[in-house]
Structures are given as structure tokens and as C-alpha cells.
Length: 154
Image 1: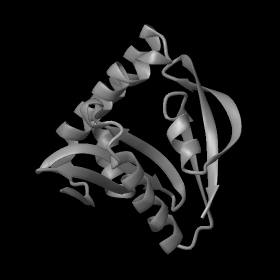
Image 2: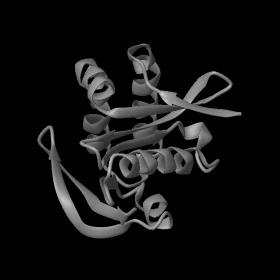
Image 3: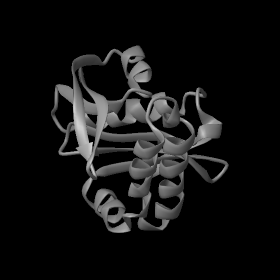
């Protein structure tokens, strides 16, 4: 049975492992080897992960006490991250985390939620009624990444 709970600082090793592995194994379909290496290196920025957990609505999905995914919401309506372990894709974990993130935005008074999503994640968001606002090039550590700004009316 899946359990959703707020993340703790003790979860960081599991969160960063999922982040790195998802990028390396799943996003590699849509981004170059160099982009994947640079993007995945963000897993090593422990202070940023601590800050996200402390300052965002950050939740994890657990199956049999093992973290299989996470999501976080910043500034009330900015859906900043959604990552599912590569072995647990297409089992509803991402959708469940998404629904809880959206509910949190609604409960804090927002009517619209926005996100920057990768090429890989775009179909999931579109299947959940997010609308592409625009395609963009985003710079990260000196490299340009193509992604999409999406939104959804709540």
C-alpha cells in the first residue's frame, strides 16, 4: 500500500538517488549525454535539497517503507519537481503525488498551478489536463535544456 508523507532531511539520500537515477535512466531518451550528466549532478547539491525540504511543501511516496517517488511545491503554486523511481513508473505514483500537490495549492488559495516540465514528463502533465504555455530553453550550469512551461486551472 502506498503511503504519502512530508519529506524529512533524513530522506535526502533516497530523494537524491531517485533524482539521479530517473534523469540517468528515463530522461536520457530526450536529452544528450552531456545534458544528463550536468542535470544529474544536481543530486550532489545537498544544501539545495535541505532548503527545498525546509521551504517547500515536499512529499514522498513510500511503498512498503521504501521511497519510490517525490514531489514538491514552492511559493504556493509552483510545482517544482516530480520524480518517480525508474522501476515504479506507470503505476499511478506520479498521478497520486500530482493530485496531492494540486490539493495543497488549492488549500492555500491558488486557482492556477504552474510547472517547468521536461520533454519526458510532458505527456504525463498533458494527460492530467495541464496546458502548454510555451516551449523554452532553460540554462542550467552553462547548458541549454529544452522544456515546457505548463499550467492548470484548479
